[in-house]
Length: 108
Image (cartoon, rainbow, N blue to C red; front, side, top):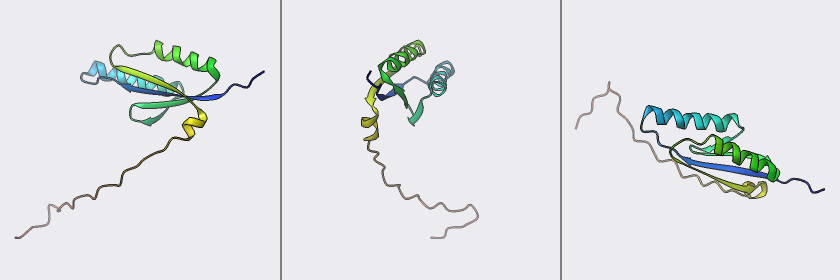
């Protein structure tokens, strides 16, 4: 009997938030992802670990059942080894401008 492989299911979504109703639908989708065991990687990118192809199919069906009416949702299946090889690139923080306190007076 072969052992089931650990996989990652990565969900990417772009949902409209132009009205209160659309914001509510987007928030409900995010809450579904969190309750279903997904962790946020970025603002609209969530990931969860699953074991084997049967679990992937189960979560694919759950995503389809909770899709918002508008917007785009994509998902990607990767092995845990591929996910572990992800490289994070972080930019250098920009220097902040110095703000003058309201109590200070500038003379030129």
